[in-house]
Each structure stands twice: as structure tokens, then as C-alpha cells.
Image (cartoon, rainbow, N blue to C red; front, side, top):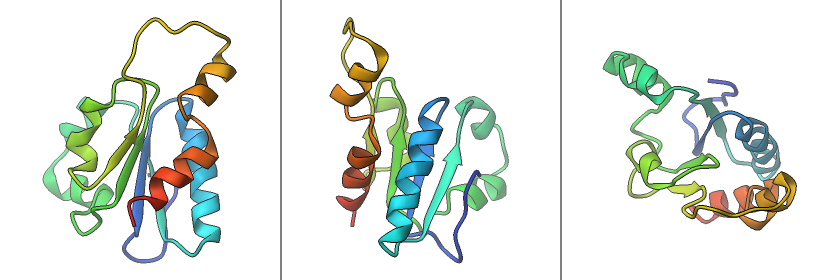
Length: 122
């Protein structure tokens, strides 16, 4: 866990790699809106899955069903962590070519888009 809140989170943002900074920026904005936000860095889902149930519950409590994953990769994998009530900011296409900053903006890897997706879960 990179960032926690007081009590049960209203929203959990799960991110990997370079998207962690994006998740933290979105958490800052959502906190300003009065939301309790937890940010979880999950660089290795297999290592997380290997943990005992108590640990997994402490990181991703079942009581918080508003979850958003942010990863510059395929979205379908992340639904096992965000559930049916969650959302994923990701890329489901292949072969796009442009400077990285342009692609990230085009595919919604901005603080503004992550905040919008998160607010859509409420």
C-alpha cells in the first residue's frame, strides 16, 4: 500500500509501474473532493495472489467495492481485483505508434481521466 486513508476507503486505486504516479495524483484530487482513497501498488500480481487471505483482505478489503485499476496494458486481467463494480483504465489495442506522452493522453492516462473514471464509480 502506498497511500492509505482514515478508516475504510471509499475507493481503492490499484496501479503498476509508471502509472503509480498517475494514481497518486488522482488520489490527491479525489481526496480534495472529500473521498477516502487508498492507493495500492501491485507490481507483481502473482506475488500478491500468493499471500494469505488475511493479508489480501487487509490490502483490498471486501467492504470497498469501488476499485479502479490503472495500467498501460490489457484491461481484462484487472477485473479479478476490481470486481464487477470496478473499472480499469488500460489499453486493449495493439500497434499504436506515437511519442509516449501523446499515447498516454490519447488513451486516457491523465489525472483528469482517472478522476473522472473514479467519480463514475460513485
